[in-house]
Image 1: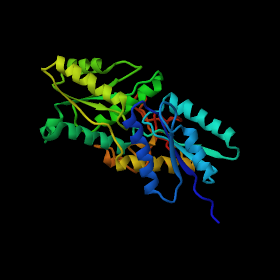
Image 2: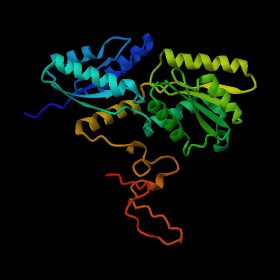
Image 3: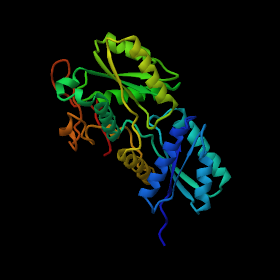
Image 4: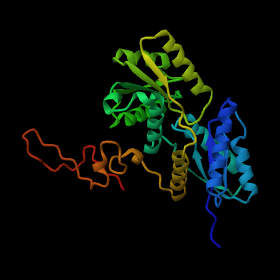
Length: 308
């Protein structure tokens, strides 16, 4: 008899928004339907039912002993770094004999960047038909915002990756809570940079109170600045790319194949404009000395010594 695969436990932030909570629960159901051979359950850290502990109990009752937990979050902030691991260790005390592996947050994976690009195209509609049209568009990517500087830096990383090779004038960054710049300041900054057309793009998986607030603040700012064209794009939503990515994170966690930043490595993934780099052998990086001679240094300056 073969050992059954570890169950997939999806951990969400939680939201006071009923539509947002329902979007999460519906997403978990879709994952379960797509993988009937796999026990799947999901729960929240706070604010909305079901709590994570209830999802664990439900799976334990079905005889599950091994879990792979995937945070349904774009960014690794306090929740993914602290709250979920703490909740999981609490469940281990509650259910002796269960074991966990823990997956990575989702962003900024290339497949999510392509969904974001689609959301921008939808928001711009027929007004962007040529590469030149894109060069007039400034994007304001708006993250949740965190007291964790590393989490906020991840949103900047997503913005830069979204900008690379796609031809937008700029991709600027703002936050809806807990971190500067806020949405109005982010829009002001776009205008100072010469933006004529701005698309505000929420860096959120599902609908909820915070994405709604992004839209309200955008509309308020736009009303006060009629000379600037401002549009609001939609959240990522339960797209096939998101379902696939959660399974990719699950497989990684199960195999213990947790990597560094290889999702967005040009040597692994065809990023727009860098497709020729995929699979290239990695060469050590030599710097000429002051006299212009190449000496083989023992260390690699920024060499990609990825164990791919």
